[in-house]
Amino acid sequence: MNVFEKHMLDLASRSFERNYNTYSEFLNLDEISTLYSLKLPVKFSLYGGYEGAERCVALFGDGEKAEYPISCIKLSPVSRKFADRLTHRDFLGAVMNLGINRNTLGDIVIKDNVGYLFCLESISEYIIRNLTRIKHTTVKCEPEDGSIDFTPPEPEALEFTVPSLRTDALCAAVYKLSRNGISELFREKKVFINSRLCEKESALLKEGDTVSVRGRGRFVFKNELRQTKKGRLAVRVYVYK
Picture 1 (cartoon, rainbow, N blue to C red):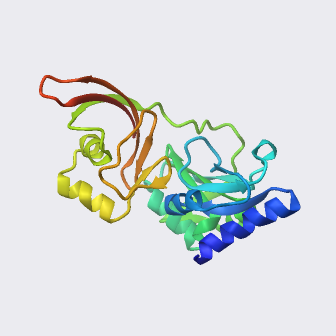
Picture 2 (cartoon, helix red, strand yellow; picture 1 turned 45 degrees about the horizontal axis):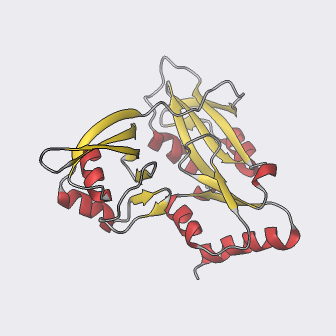
């Protein structure tokens, strides 16, 4: 058992033994996948500050009484007219340059060149006080006031014909990749089904499964529509851009 697994087990055990909720730091897809594989004494739930977040905090205990220790900070250019065009890498790099651990930070959502950073409550005031510049742009940091809708955009419904319901077949269709390109994704452990790492290219998808491919996005396998005259399967998927 590695350090991460021991830490998760310790949090779960404390929740079970003392009958209160405990919380992890922000977890990435690899860590969430590992968490699902552990035998824990209590149930856990995941939340990243908004629906569909990729990086999430794990709650061990009673999800009905959840009070996730997550804050959202608005990072906005002081002068929109003269601001650089800021990317996710720019926002993250500037925050990391403050000497902050990555596991205290969640997702960064960008809307109209303004970044919305989800982070642990314990680190939010430090970021607000100390982050003043991103690239060449002076920024203002303040708590997000709840006026922004972080609901993810509706996915695009697409139809494909595939030879089977294998994960590699649907990934190849959705992301327009060759067999070698898909194999590389699996070798690099970048494919997850319902937040669990998928290492078998031949794994069959079931209706409602969510497939996340690190660096490319995610899609939901909606359903099988019909079989074509050539024996292929017509399927519908919902692709999140």
